[in-house]
Image (cartoon, rainbow over all chains, first blue to last red; front, top):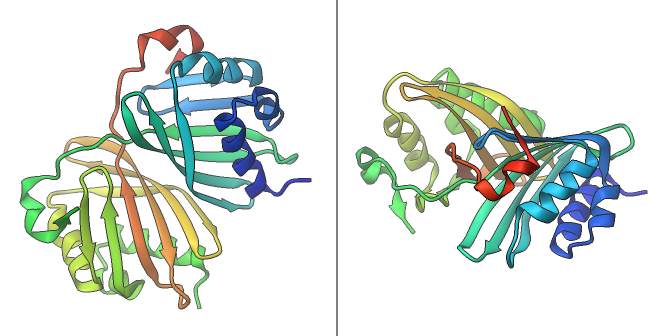
Length: 125
Length: 125
């Protein structure tokens, strides 16, 4: 029996290794995925596996920066490396009573220039 | 003595109420803030309080969507409402041995249009 932390780690490991059977096993039958930035929503395990298999073509790899789990809630911060470079990604997960992933909220922040008004308040790196 | 979860909740409460004394008390003396999207970095408690006091002018409010804490690591997802609308924000925190916030990594994802190639794989909301 995996801990909730191990479930989220296994989710990213299954995605990285394209082990879609293992990936599907970690999901609740009625999993709901939402990407608030693009307002995309995917409902159900098979639709969500298909979204991952078919929705991200090309070469890509991911590495976990941080997984944080508290009770049935989890957050992850990953580094996604694809053909257009490397980008951070954040997910918030809700797990069901069987430690399956029931809800995923996904965020992909892009680079931006800081407002000039706060240039004196921070260094750049 | 606050739990690590309570420390992160108090951090957002202090920001929302502009209680900068309470806000400062939650931070390690050598706190480091980084915003990977803008590559801004702020080092030290007093500089980081000033960044918050002076760096975000105008009316704004925030509401916590989720706080997840595991050991010395935490993640939060907030809703920031300012003059240009409402935006989600994610932070990853590291706490020191005294449960003070020692490291903050801050992300602000913007809306985007999904790639057309996956339109058949997700609904829009």
